[in-house]
Length: 416
Length: 116
Image (cartoon, rainbow over all chains, first blue to last red; front, side, top):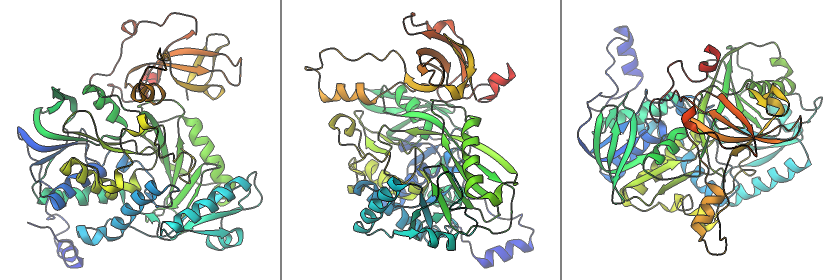
């Protein structure tokens, strides 16, 4: 039965002490055979299952997840959503996603708490100014809302920012008003619930060990709950995608690194937009609970420890305290790392490969959360039709042979 | 943060070093004959194991010399560092704590080296 959420269901369940809420999804034992198996129960994977069922009429689908839903990078990012990318291919992909975000709460009838509070990208030197103005113009040509803010306008929007008295003064910024933040768990849970209602099996605590192939065609996947046969497999395992690909004999151009973030103790509302700075590497927004959510950088070396180096945190905190002296005496509550898979061109791979029936959605690097619905939507199309959607056709594996890269390293408005 | 044993200077803080990615990558022979695909693989694809990994480091803020290293990427434990002209150590000499392709070591990622 379709679960409905409203002020009335909230009031009704409040009367019974919130003890009678129905389970959001079943927890079935895996069947022997599925048309499609999605490996990875994060937002991208669950969304793929949702769109496969909703838009392509496939329902014999399983999503297998080694831990709990949304416990990987979906739950480990800073939830920033924007689409102000430089290159056309990226802009179309992320804008597709942003448009889906805008309607997602009502489509899923589940509040993903998408808050379009605007995203600012700071310029700290002459070169930044030129790069950012160029990006703003490129965005405008692609129909994306984006404009240049002067220092005075920034000061008005974020009065707590120290714009002048620091090593890298703030000279201006790009601003995308439709950007913002969303609730990380809600996107995973919302997709999971609606996919489950359409018959998708969501299987948690089921770790994929090895992808089995025969004569260049997919056979299935060995998991901790036995061997599951499948016609098609979509791998959406972020940092561990390369490890799984290797088990099928495919080498992907990915390097896995920890990306860190941290949150402070909760305080009263103090910053009502998202501010990112790639030059001094600090970005910040304030959660609805009042915590500052601070994004740091990746380690320079490959690692699968979901922890990251302390020097990275030091760098970010140094920049934060310089930009916002008012935060100087705050305490940090939690710090964590997520394992991101980075492509040589810092753009994702949403592609089929040499093995018939095997698909990859990976390489999102440091910016996958914002793309969740868009990525899932075009990946579902790619799996169902065996052909990429127009939007993700540039993000194929062949680009590493043809040289047609989508080089977003310096262009994506934030350092990787 | 890692403590890295530079083969020339001894143990130093990681912030003195820069990482150089996978070690022992061989440039393919016959660059005129090989196709775009093989060439692309050489340019773009590097090993990315969860477990034992041959990698390069350079002591940027020290002796500025390059050297190689075997590190367990699931725990960040550095098993050996060696000079560029030394033989590549056999990975069978080291015990990897990773049990499954995507598994975590028993003590929890990262805590392993602390525990030790």
